[in-house]
Image 1 (tube, each protein chain N blue to C red):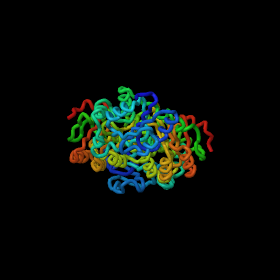
Image 2: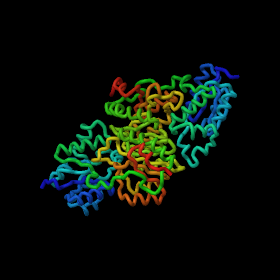
Image 3: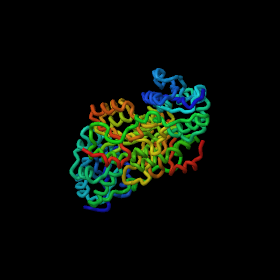
Image 4: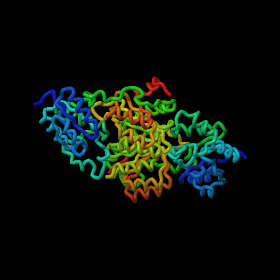
Length: 288
Length: 288
């Protein structure tokens, strides 16, 4: 029953898969969810047309299931905490299959996100499944351009954004991480595999007088099939808890889960929240 | 009594100032130490020809003292934990003078190390005091090229060094930090203002199966007057405590405080310890 009307959603953690599934269903697609075991939320089964668990690193299991359900297109949505792969016994504790081990140890030159995920996408493609832009069926989740919250951008913050934007982009180009913390012309923290939340916590500890800014941006050549920058209300709660004063994301390339709630919470905490297209576009935004 | 035979050592924390003072004295210089209050070690007074405390951010006090002792040349040695400037009340808690505040808030475009320290060096120069290469009188503290310890470099580590070297250099070019942690083609952690020791701790937490590598390198255009990468036995203790398997530094541009002790300790903990000139020079080192 292979048909072009079926979309497979390979789902990681968080609520973003819900939005992808709902968007695809509104487009009239039959949505089959492959939930990554111990990572995806079991409640996805309630909204999917069909739901199956797959082991995160058993690519052969993915392929068998994709073929069985007749999916020729797929999207990957939700996050996988990469740092868990560096726990004791490393990736072997995830019981990878031979297909994954060959990819991990033979096919790829390094283990950065883009390298690994591009190899996975290529492998799926070789087996007849095309990985698609994850926002294809839910474009409204992407941050629109401009000041999104009630707080304005002042001259000092504008200078920090102009200073830090290109550095954040370089981190993306090198595929190190998506976020940096900046205050008054100083880079306080840079994200690597620890993830944005742990970096926010560190920035708060390093900058006890608060009022710092989180910049989270896409890579210069962001592959919208995977690893798209994503924020949600947890991000705002975490920023507030650790004294941040502003959150700046990249317009059109950042997923905002529950956008209205995120904006309301940022306003409640008086955190500046804006999305810009590039560093100089900040000049188009009136400052307070 | 201004004379070309006097060297002022502006001293921060750690033991490196001792080596600078001893080296300068062996060159027959009169060594006047300006110890940064609450940062430098008081025992420097025992080996200096003259010793004075100066407040860290009172540049006018520095200049008055430099002129009074007749110093036309100076070096800056030892570290200052920059993260302390981000504590509550920020730099104001250090009671900066007007000269420093003008530099900090008016003269410089951002607060990265090179920007700040170059501005300080230029200010001293305008007042007749030339800041010199900090290793000028103690060149033997610089890491020689090659495998320095007893542990050999294997093929896997060589690949990681080749992969991570250019990324570490980029971090230096952007003046973000000197160190990164890598394992099996993945960048585990990147240093910003938290300093190398805190980054080592984080890498250990993120990589519980251990065996990761610390790369600490100079900037592409390292100014040898300040901010020269420095390691010592504390670095090795810290690496061991957090499960690192290798320490790779840049030959000729890294200060090793107590080099023989550092090598002995790395050997005791079976940590690979090597200094290389550039990423491809690793090919000249025989692997085990």
